[in-house]
Length: 269
Image 1 (tube, rainbow, N blue to C red):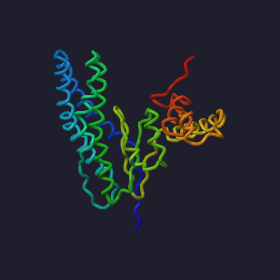
Image 2 (cartoon, rainbow, N blue to C red):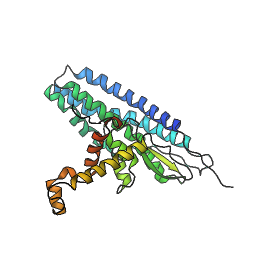
Image 3 (cartoon, rainbow, N blue to C red):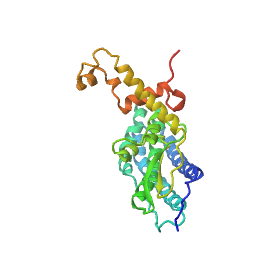
Image 4 (cartoon, rainbow, N blue to C red):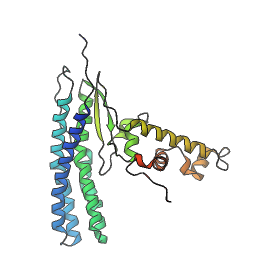
């Protein structure tokens, strides 16, 4: 008898993301309460408090996020798949929490406590979410029913996240796709044998604009003075913005279709 596994439901992914966002919000609320209580203290003491608090808060709420991810992983595995018990994992970024906190509070030394909090909130968001991400990524490598994973971005993602979610033919894709930023809502989604990952929102539109950005850069650079006679290293030095790098493709895509990305760049009129 051939076993047919259905498409993972988009609703399952939405539930996981919503659950993770609740945990992240709770972590930010706890950290924010401590931060506000320290604002009347000398900035050095406030900074020291955050260097202790950020790792502790990230670890406690991260453990909850990892546990939720492991439970979710088991719940969405296909019926009839070989038995597998998902484990929870700790991200390597947790070891960097104290250093990230030091960076995050630095604006406070110039009197910018609002800017410091923006960084702190983004830092703890990433650290907590990383527990969810690494739990899924690592279980995929051990689950006999899974064949891999891909990054899934939110529909209102920034250009970088959109690129990582849809451009799969990158050298060492999994390493590139593991690069998350503060306030990033991307999550890894596993793919099981005989099962497809739900379609990425805006996938076709994002792929089209990245292809268009590449084509526009290529067409423009061929018209540059000396482009056809310069050696490769000379081109890179003289015209760095016309190299077909991810950075340049993203910069051009943000300007070509600013409404497609959270960080789209609109022309000044």
